Length: 130
Image (cartoon, rainbow, N blue to C red; front, side, top):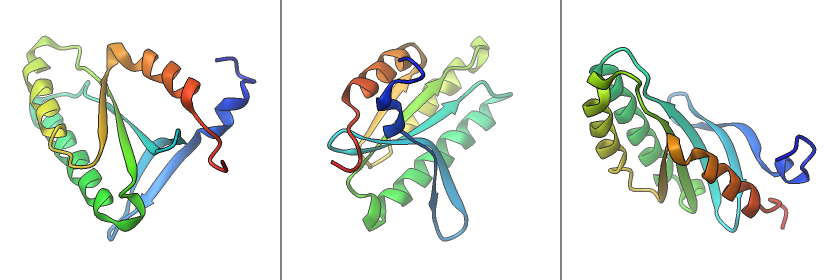
């Protein structure tokens, strides 16, 4: 997309969703008949425990958000970055399994599919006012 593409303005940036303790931050919200929240999750972390903790954190956060009335019609799009270190690949695969436990409507988009996801989102985005 070109920087002046009018459709880009339909992507709301830096969305913060409050919960009972703090807030969960999502990079974007966009609409295509369904409201979509985008969260990027990089798993280029130092060890297996960090990968597990991040997967549990976001599975729990999204499940909690989804239970609130305001977000029951949302889809959660998770854009994942795989670790570079081969010794963390198995932990990353475990993180994918944990993220599958998100009960909300979700799409898990791995690194190699992110560009196509972005093109599809740009093609399908609608003004939130329509």
